[in-house]
Image (cartoon, rainbow, N blue to C red; front, side, top):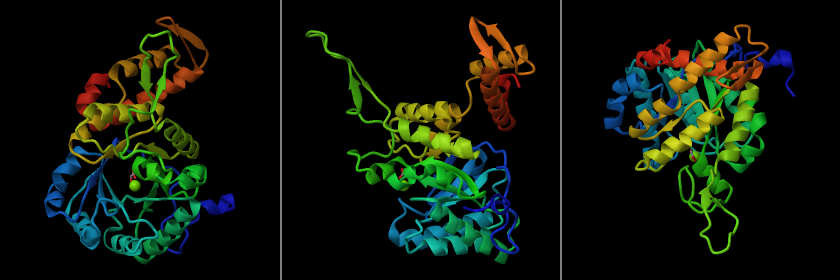
Length: 346
Ligand code: GLV
Ligand code: MG
């Protein structure tokens, strides 16, 4: 085990010191761009004004023959576009692929000072994070990168789920984690063919009552993993995200999947299609009525201690802390979105 005093030491001479706290940033959606397509790259300047994070995808969904073009296109996009306060991320290819090493070395060597986060797919355990952590420190030193590039792991293998706590705490470079339901379904041999969302056959059946038709209720296939991921991330003070929702034609199901994750503690999700951006904006910002109630709690208990009744409901130190979570998030949203700020009365 690495000793506490060494945990925050740079891993290479000349690399920037690891961050002790994550930067405070609103990251409601991580918007995926296929950077080998010029038409998509051309939209990046406008896109950067509407989303919280722009991610150049180099991994799955990019055809093998376009892997190099995607990497080059991402670098070109990073060099030419001013992303302002919007995050610039990339999802590199898996560490066991023929492309990962060049993805990392070429991107850090060219746009390392603009890159905020590397999303690492197929993470099985802390060893994957340690490898990337060390390599990034060497490259940061070589290329005089000023702030550490963070790592975001995709939780999408059964082994990764088993090791989720060790992954979350593997390095001070850890930004957070996203649930990858498509690869995870395959890794677990789940009997589905979907990218996230529910399944009509995963349901509970009400008890039999004579000949009456028995009600069924569809259950959330991702509840267990999301909750496990949220606990691992919250304990490590890093950020949990729901990942992709593949059925672009079903906005209601996408919203419901995103909302379940938000209520459980996730801070955002991936948007693979422009129609999902508005859904993520709506879901990953607290409801103004909830924020108003949270403000009532905080103003009735200014020092956050004791107990009061509001509208017949007991409030105490714990609900005060829940209220603070909602208000802090509402303030972050309001700072970026004046219209929401007005709805929150902030
Ligand atoms: C995402 O990468 C997934 O596999 O769901
Ligand atoms: Mg995947």
